[in-house]
Length: 281
Image 1 (cartoon, rainbow, N blue to C red):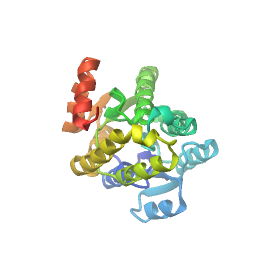
Image 2 (image 1 turned 60 degrees about the horizontal axis):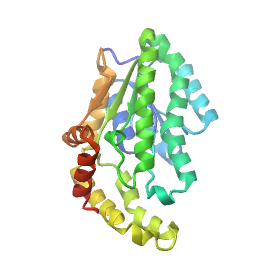
Image 3 (image 1 turned 90 degrees about the vertical axis):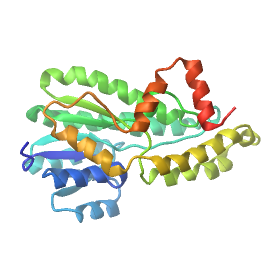
Image 4 (image 1 turned 180 degrees about the vertical axis):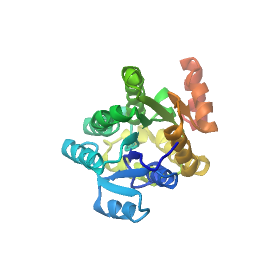
């Protein structure tokens, strides 16, 4: 594939999967429009490589999205692919989950992804391009304390399935990536969960959920140790961007493949296995 005159938009490119993917794609010759919200991140991205064009992009802001794709269209470089990577992970017991947190989780991971995708489709129709969405193997079963995140990724998976069928006549492919743990800065944010819950849970609630909190802390430590290197993920995404016929779904990594099998088990067995792994009642 001649990549020298093809553009790719990557959302959430300031760190982690987004940044690694943007860098991998420019190394392969693509012009990458790397989206980020903060000015300091935009400056850092622009300094990485001459073919990275940093654009201010907040997936929850309609004006920001419109302006970003105006910049892409005005560049004159045909848009070959959109990488929907921007996302957040919010946690806690559903019993005490602030509804504002649930709305924020869905607004970023689901509504924001669709808003960006809608803005990209007119340009992708011109090139018979492709859409890549970063999902999670967590979309296949609800994990304790991760209900909002799991729900957002499950919704995203179903929307991508529908979108793939709707855009097939236009020659636009839609691929969903599902990983388990990946070594990114998100784990440091996860370590703040215990302090956050201590500060905001009602009296007595923290004691009720103490086994789940401790399980979450143990799991964060484990996932950070065994998670996929972010370059492995970036290479897998880049392969889908290059592929003549991208697959509908990519399950990447041994951990994700094992969890996909567990997710298909009968619910009672699956729940027993999850509780055993997490060491919760």
